Length: 89
Length: 411
Image 1 (cartoon, each protein chain N blue to C red):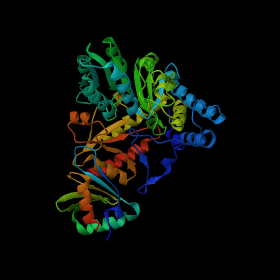
Image 2: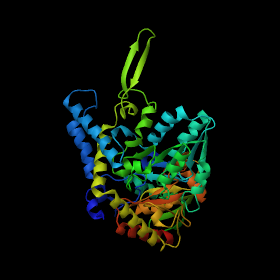
Image 3: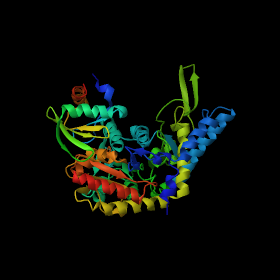
């Protein structure tokens, strides 16, 4: 059982009117984090060799193979924290 | 002409890779990279001369003081100020503007007065005035921008009336790179008896700036955007204005004397000479020395050459970006009215997606509001992606950037 802190280096609310939250995974844990997230999310499509469009509990997110993710239309980073705790458990 | 390939050899960070790709650093409007000369100057200070400045008679303090004072003089020459007395070291542009707002504004602005800013300002040239206006009752008026992001000079003329006491304007927009005609604005301000402060954070690093020619009262800029370290910046002001102004912060260094009067049990305080009157506490000595080295580096290159190189890159990038069907560039299309900053969007992608996509290929750009939300509201956009160039960027980097934008368009 992993926790958010084991996998996530930073969670930031994006600047701009889009209510997005940017997540950066720890470099040495990013592959493991991506694997866990892929196992629990619904894959919509591969947007390119480096981006995956996913959904989880109705929330849309884009996962980058470089170890970053954007959660869309969230109210706050706390909301992302809750989703990540489920995704990375 | 600059040789960016030779310049790149001076910047250790440009040798690294990001996400397996050679680093392309296009976030220069946020901060610049640092050459070895600046890094070494800071290291050398700590290894050889480190001591607190002023009022100590030992050798190290004398050396540190001389270096720190020389840094002020070097900066003064760089912007053609009359002397080091007109150069106050601060943390950065934001602190410089706040210094003026609190030290000058608090004592000179009152109900009925007007402070004129523009809608293209960085938040740091809006927020201090809005805060103070609520305390002192003066009005903050906003000059419009045209649809292409240039300043509306007719709106400026309308807004600068005899009620205007202070005009605050950026020399170059940090979002669009639009260059404002400061000489014209300074004249308009002075004709109405107002003073002018220029946010030069995006101009001093990129073009020759002569405070006498512009005839500005205050000019603020940051060291870290011009090859220097973070935490050091500059407030230039005309000497006679600084002499009349009250100090911003109180403490050591900024005083000449603090004498206790036992008859009233209070202290009488007299201020230090300029510019130290405005530099309370132990200053950022190594930062000042790093900034001096950055200034020397830019002077060796020649600021006309710096400007010319960025104009060439901007023109080239603006021309090549037209090949991208889904890319919209915000701001003026004419590269001759702007500095090396290109704000853009891609249909169907948020600015953060664009930035993350480029990051995956080692290209660093910025996304969001760039601390200029009112300008984004004028453009009716939620945010923007921004590429910004400097002396070490090359046409090949622009080519790679365009290739990746074309890949993003296929997503």
